[in-house]
Image (cartoon, rainbow over the protein chains, first blue to last red):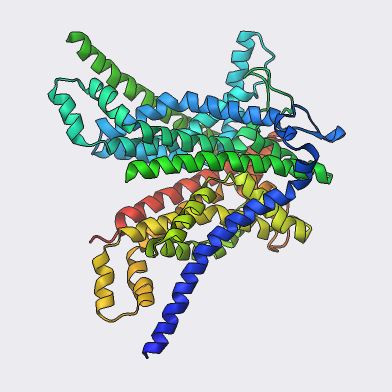
Length: 292
Length: 265
């Protein structure tokens, strides 16, 4: 009887261990597959791949700098645009409204915003934001493409608000009430307490929230693909059409003829993988440290 | 002093204003989708949309078959074990969660589409399953960690073996949280488009063969929304309406489960 149980016990523990091990194996498989498949491109272009400004499948010339730049600009601009909005929500839910139905409702709405599929963001952006950007461009006297890096950033900035806001409100809620009360007892107004006590205390956690939403913005594909204009040229300003690393992969990989073309696209995927992984690990590390 | 009070008021006003502004896009999007979706109601159950709905369900089932059991097991592993390896597995889950879906698509393309010499529903399900995995693992781990130790001790004290304690006591107690995680992960992948571009690819025909390309709602929306034909765009609106309702309802159900079914200790 006892032996019977202990045998089952062992099997159970082994299965659990294997499932954990499988996760590690999966990640390594992903990593290795990317590296092996992008090897032809790594061999052909070396580090010049990152700085190459020309992407021309016709002449087999591949450099991903325009896409790297496009990704960094769209993600950075989106982060900048969403900054005050997500910070405001974090402060409102984390500090002003702690209990009751209003913060519950607000939280629910923000979660819904995170739940909307990205292809629908793209669809909406295409038919709602693009005409607006076109009008701005006409007003400014620029060629009114409508699809541009700015449009992509606008869509992205809406999409990432829930991510930084949900971490932000948690972090602000974690600020110990003793130090807040100390501030009030010195005669500080609520604004002063938030500005001089809460925000400095929560600074680390807040920045982690923004890092994680940056990671999300870097990898976002569909919404960006639909409104960025998909141009392989180096973007001149934020009103010109561009491409991000994710959107160029989505657009071209199923049509990629030739080994070098495919492997260059996969190398872009590898770069994207590295970029988002670093940003995410940094963000998660800070969040983990703040929460403990 | 007066200036400080005014500043205080102004600050609060600004916070409220900015918060309201960040909610507005949600209503704009919902309004836009509903308005256009309802005006193209005629297309709501066109054959194209119908086969996309079927395709979406097939893909979700394929994804769930391997990711739900594996995710729950890995979640139990993370919450029950200690040591360096556990820490490393947790890191891997976090990295996995951060990988852009298009990169997952590339992996499924290289590992399944290329060897099989063709786009298929299986490869799409595989890609979606990998995206579901970290969500399920994390929610399982977090739920199980919240279950009081006394419950486990009580079961062990009665002489119930460890594996039965986990399967028959701990797991049922955390069922609501695990179910919520599964529903949220389904909600997330049912709108996922990018990996499907390289795997399931889309198809114009009703197709139940999982080794063939298959259509799904987000793929249909993407393909039709970027087309120049008004008829197709209308179908994309109708499909968006269905997709957004599906995702929102899943989200709401998931949240209700958390509230209603949570076992109080």
